[in-house]
Image 1 (cartoon, rainbow, N blue to C red):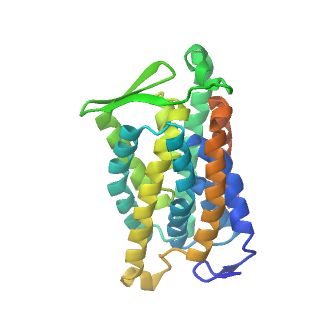
Image 2 (image 1 turned 60 degrees about the vertical axis):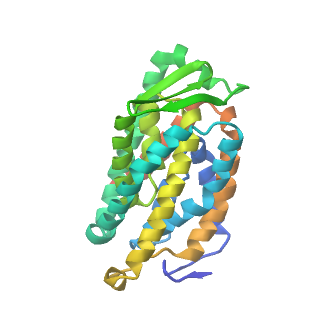
Length: 300
C-alpha cells in the first residue's frame, strides 16, 4: 500500500502489528507508545517531515480510547489529576506545534531533540528504580501482582493541592506545581508529536511519588485530548503558506493503521496492568527510552 504524505510503500499489516506490540507494554505506564512509533517512522520507514509528528498525534487519537475505557471501568481514573494535566498541556502543545513546523523542520535537528528528551526521561526512570529499593516498605503494595482492590477514592482538588486515596494511602501534590509541569510537558510533546504522556508519567512517579497504577489513566486521557488538539492545529497549519513549503498534515492512511493496532494493544495493556509490578513496568519503559535515545545520538 502506498502512503502519499509519508511517500512510502509497505504492507498494510505492518503498522498495526508494530503499534499493537509497542502499545501493549507502554500503556501499562500510561504511555500510548507514540514516543517509540515516531523513531520507527523516522529511522525505519524514512518518514521524517513535520507530518510525522501530526501522524503520531493521529495515532494517539485513534489508539487511546480503548485504554481510557478500561481505566474508567476499573475505577482507576483520577479525574482531578486528569483535568490539571489537560489544562496545562493544551497551550503548551499548540506552542510546540508551531516550534516544530517553523524552527525544527530539519530531520537532523529534530532527531537530536528527540534523543535528548528520551535520554533525560530514561535516566530519571532508572534513578527512580534504584531509589525504589530504599523505599521498598512503602511501595511493596504496588508490587503485589495479585492485588485485588485497585480502585481510587476520595479524589479532591483545590487551588493549593490535589489528593486521592489508593490502597489505604493518601497521596497529595501541589496543584500549581503540577500545572506548570504540564505546561512544559505540553510544549515538548507538541514538538515531538506524542501528546506528552511519555514525559509526564516519569515525573509523576519519580518526583511526586504517585503510584504508576494510578497515574496511567490520567496520563492517557491527557495525551488523547492534547493529541486531538495537535492534529487539528497541524491540519490548520497545512492549509496556510507553511503547508505549501513542506508536508505538515497527517498521513491519514498510516495514522489510522497505526491507531487500529494501538487501540487493541492499549486496551489489552490497560486490562493486564494490575498483574505487572510497578518496578517491571518502569524497567520496560526505561529500557525502551534509553535504547531509542542511544540510537539517535550515536547511530543515525
